[in-house]
Image (cartoon, rainbow, N blue to C red; front, side, top):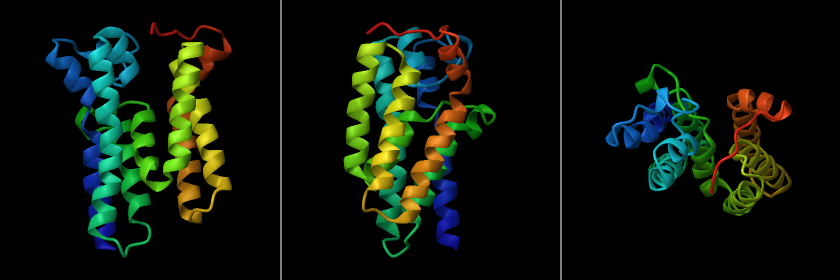
Length: 195
């Protein structure tokens, strides 16, 4: 039990590292007061620049991947370790202790987590994410549709039931974090991004 608690705590702290805020701050920008106010890659891309947006995306993805990889590797005999570490990392990103429990929307970090738990579903989802983003220019729509498809693939696949449950929980959390975007999409007021 203590191993799971340790993994949950450290993964949460790892997920809490606000790379978007840090990268923007290095450019003299407080990303929380610009654009949508979100610390994620899309807002950093819009406000600071393409390179900074890409780096935010990359580091946010890597912290999710790292949490699962580190603790699954350290405790290979603990069946639920990847699930606990992955979920904790996404919660850390969404509700960062370093930003008074505010954070991003968890898309890149979520994909980093599931990339190790079910690589095929994750890679298909990421390809769909990019395709929808390029065609629609709606970052939120691309994220929600792609991870919905990713989750369907996972549920239909031959993976542990606990992993399938994690996919569903992460999908619900992603929809919750995008509730304002969903409202704007319905009203046709959502902002497109320039690619």
